[in-house]
Image (tube, rainbow, N blue to C red):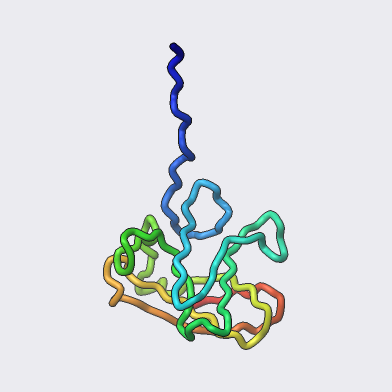
Length: 139
């Protein structure tokens, strides 16, 4: 009788960390949508060798709808964030995010929060300034 070994499953993915690129096949880039936003990882509209997150807020989405970059771990308030804390210090208080927009004047909000205590947060908002183009936003 021949003994057949079970097929190994896919390799375990590593936890997301900064900088986030969405290009590393070994990383778990988990997206948690809320307020009826719909996000997927897609090919960059200007560079087919790059992948990005596309978030769509339809007319039925809540005004506060968006997407969290986190691994679900039992629901709200217990999601797993980045592998390492965001390195904020008194002299390092900003982050940059590249945003592609289909129109100008669209609000973009960035919020960070402590994954173990969602009452410790900071958020800021800017608006897009170009149509069908990338913009580097510093928040």
